[in-house]
Length: 110
Image (cartoon, rainbow, N blue to C red; front, side, top):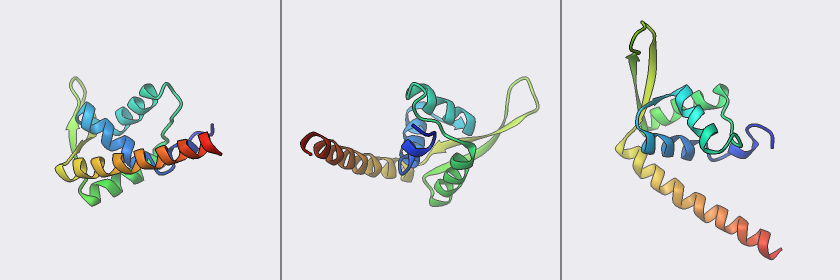
């Protein structure tokens, strides 16, 4: 499957779920988690991830903080889900389950 085709419409859900389960992460960490958990089926490109993260931050679903990493002077931006983000995650999971259930029914009965 082409890299981003399978993520269309699901990126917000995936990011929110990763942050809810794994805690604060930087963008690259979120990407790695999605790829590892999906067994390399889902891949997130920076060009898709960071605009989505910015949009979710503006919506109040996530918050970000610059953190200096231990042992080096590098800084990374860590993202964390907010209370509003948890509400959005719940709604997105319900919507996703309804859509995938409907698609499954069509595939089985068509």
